[in-house]
Image (cartoon, rainbow, N blue to C red; front, side):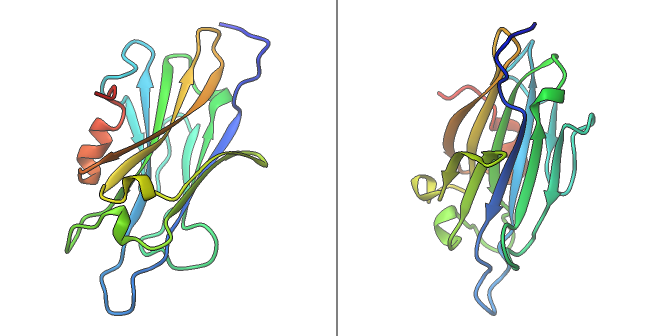
Length: 176
């Protein structure tokens, strides 16, 4: 596979939200990336990156992980280095899940939630989760390797009513 098209290089996904009001349980959102094989791009993920982890080859890294949404700037950040991902992988799906602890929380319950996907200074997409306000998890992006080996971005906002474990298994399935 070779091409003169450059495709995507290093992409950053960031997430921020406001913390819970004083006296209420913390709200914990997590960026999750699922990597899928070229042999089965809509099957089970070969691996997931989440909760302060990185991919086995170091091409996808969760750089910042917040459990509360407190602080300035972004609360979570993930870096994906597409130019380094092995040719055995054809697809990466990125999503966000809300940890379900004391009570069921949806994006509609989380104030000022925002995700941003960028490559360098170029913004590829930004989301406020308003379209999936009743969901507990949502995909936000799909990255696919084309026949020439070039990685492309596609917006993919789909809400799920699943806990983070189930979402991790289902997020890359073909939409019904």
